[in-house]
Figure 1 (cartoon, rainbow, N blue to C red):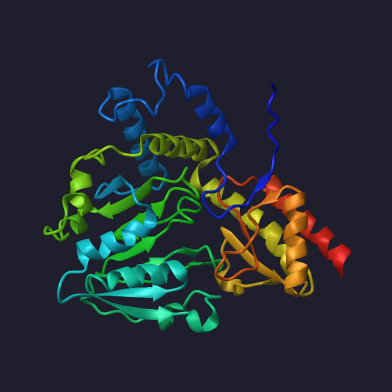
Figure 2 (figure 1 turned 30 degrees about the horizontal axis):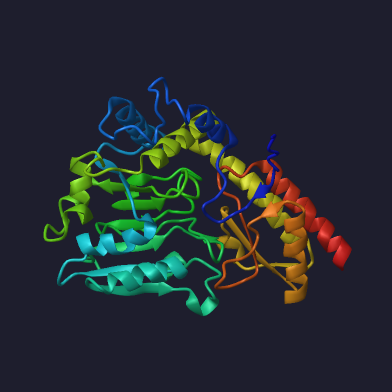
Length: 365
């Protein structure tokens, strides 16, 4: 019996599209991984074939992001949501405060978790503007003795993204980059810690990447459970306990695909081209489509928009689904429409969506 695989345009917000070349390579290696006679999922994480995969993924990440020598790369579990509590558990010590910049739901969740361990405070919030923008740098005031400042670099639900980073001086800047890591060049040296769930730009769900400065590691709280200490994982090369081996293998292959695609700079240029196709359809619609994010805060990863009324919006989403577009519904908390144009979403998919939007407008005005 022959199975037909139907091609779709995948705009899911996460888990999201993976490069076809990576999926095809994984398929060929799935049963017999590089002559071992076993699947990558069957290999011991202490075996040399797996350790080679593990270390190659770390080295590729370091090279692509030009990560300085005074940083560690960790592969953890529990998603970015686990980092919401692990960060304050390690670094928000008694008598210290930490500043959180509130730009959406995930920043708010991180802030709520920090309250369980210490004294976080809101540096700034865009809630009054329905999170349609990133705060201006002159709106931000920090304390010189803060434990850290936390930002969410890209906001998947509202479609906003930081363009210019705040200068936090000697206070460590910690960033949730789950939805825009590897989408553009980043000066890692500006951060004390970067964390990201892999399931948007780096691979399948199940792996969390943490890039942490070594001097910050030394400041971690020693009186917490072993597996919740960053030092535990840094000291063991993220092999203290069984890691998500298949996810790390896939992450390494996605990083290899980024290398072959010209590196992060080339990926960034392509992401701008992709997003422009869809934003142009919104901006040239004379109000038929209404973007949520303010112009200077627009995300290149998550493009959020509404139509004139709910009935028309439902019709748009239904017809888009019938035309092969997947994942265009907005987050359940806000509704509307959202196109997530992560690294692996091809230019052709964004062009097809732009053309669909123009035709739908023509048919429904």
